[in-house]
Amino acid sequence: MYKLKLATRYFLRRPISILAVAAVALSVFIVVVVMTVMNGLVNEFRHKNHAFVGDCIISTDSLVGFPYYEEFVAELKQLEAVEAVSATIRSFGLLTQPGATWNMGIEIMGVDPVDHAGATGFEDTLYYHRNTPQTAFVPPYHPAALGCIVGIDMMPQSRTPTGDYYHPEEPRQFELIISCFPLTIKGATGDELGMVNTKNFFYSDDSHSGLVKVDGNMIYIPFEYAQLMCGMKDPVPRASALHVRFVNTEALEQNCAAVRTLWNNFVEQKKDAPYANLLNNVRVETWIVNRRSHIAPMEKEQTMLILLFLMLGLITVFVIFVVFYMIVSHKSKDIGILRSIGVSSMGVVQVFVCFAALVGIVGAAIGGAAACGLLVYVNDLEDWLFAKYNWQLWDRSVYAIGDIPNNIEPHVVGLIILSAVAASILGALPPSVQATRKRPVEILQVNQL
Image (tube, rainbow, N blue to C red; front, side):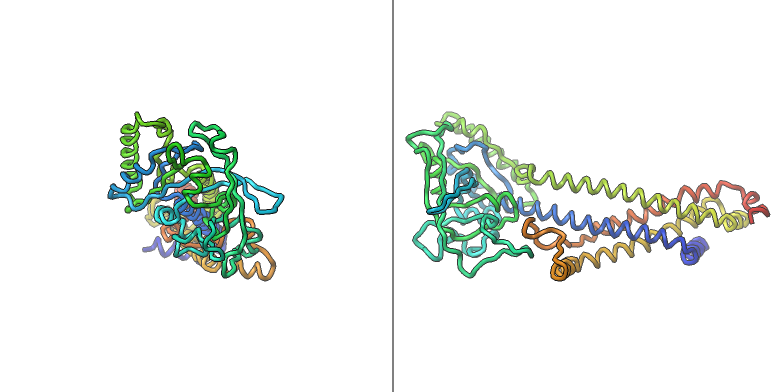
């Protein structure tokens, strides 16, 4: 009991302990705020990539696609683990408008909107047809026309400085001309397909996936038209990818392995079929593996940030070490008295460890509470700063970020607080142990009092 009483007395009566508390609080505050925001950004980016491709992707990099996809889709739907499947066409083309002198390169994705909404998060990216994907390619102002869905960042002046996208009550009325360069099944251009396939589409909706490269380059058109324009209809129908959603997403690897086994058996069955060689370059991947080139850079940045915070933790340990070295130096008389009345060296160390633990607990609690308070109101604060001083943490007209991520994860905050307390104790140990090495008679000499 005396250990805790002495530790509490030292903590309350030593002004220098305020420095230690401030160091711990500041470290915890910075780590909690930055880690919460960074974790939120990474998790949000992972979620957007997951929603874009579904749980499992069967795809090829070849622009001529792979055949017999319809037969394999029928087999896939027999698996209990599979909830939905969507076949897609991926290609490239040029975009312009009637009478315009400009054109731009685009990526084209041919989808069946109902199937794709079932297998991915496609429906949630739509604005005008979020609850009616079956009419996603029907322009309300021209129901008989062929519609297309445009990546939202391709829309002119569609984003305000606050990050909101402007949408009128009805879709804007304009026509787009899309040109494709069809390839033969051997990957060459041919006169039988035409050098360029061009078709007019009318804007029916926009898609906001939250992925910059997708929203700034992608145009979605009906699957059957994409198949014709890209030359994937003859001599055998082909697709670029199959997107799969599982009933149980927690068993992702297991379900994907089952799909991979089914695909390998399917390829073996079709080995003597025409154009079976196109099946050999098809990969069956989880969404994590398929999108790793997009997700990995952010995860590496997160790892580097964690390493930087470890260095910050070392600085905190050093600050605590200096503070306790000074405290122990001024408490040599107390140490000598404790030792002379029979308190063991370990008992003296425990007194200062309790002192350090109090510093860590109070500092971590203050820093954690301040960080959580800031995170709760961080978006309101940013809105006020933008309204008052036109300042934003991220320029919403440039970055594909809405609100600042502020989802507080209790286990992360708890781990940071425990780490701060452990760092405080670690910093206090060396001077405490060093002080107990002297004999009481040396400490209580008259010239030392």
